[in-house]
Length: 224
Image (cartoon, rainbow, N blue to C red):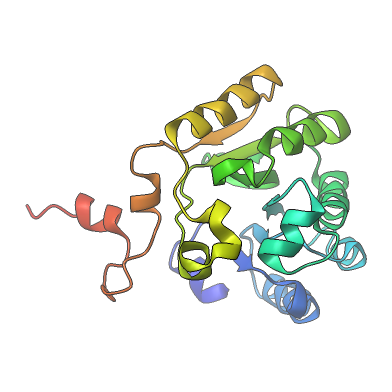
């Protein structure tokens, strides 16, 4: 963490960290004693223990959860977890209780504290985006920042299994526009949306290119 700070990184981002939360907290405290000042990002699928999240209050600055499904049935069918909806909503409610609905930026314009909920639009409305937005607005706040994503791309069983036929294609432009309309109609005030054209292309790594797996890097590294 200290090495990343010295290299100019903007934050320390822990991805799916619940299973090593004790080590995470201990490491951050040791690093803070040695001069770590970067915000800590907790990047998670939201299937988290509320008890663990409460232990991280004051340690995590930015919570970045997915809210994958609005129904338990989809959570069990596609992610093999029971009770996803209530479990994830309880976890996100705890994150909200800790950091609220305000995004706090430093003098350099970089995010220091806040909650950003990612909603990935899935084909055939498998994720139930409008229902999740309604819950966020009604139970948390319309000012909670939303990251609405169009980058879904089917791979592995989603692309080949008849059991997952509803997820076997990219989203259509109509499905994307429906999700954008829900954001507007429900009065959500903060956040970001991806561009529909190219989202699945740019955000999907090219696993055959070890040096530059992300196409946007290759596109923008124009020789001078």
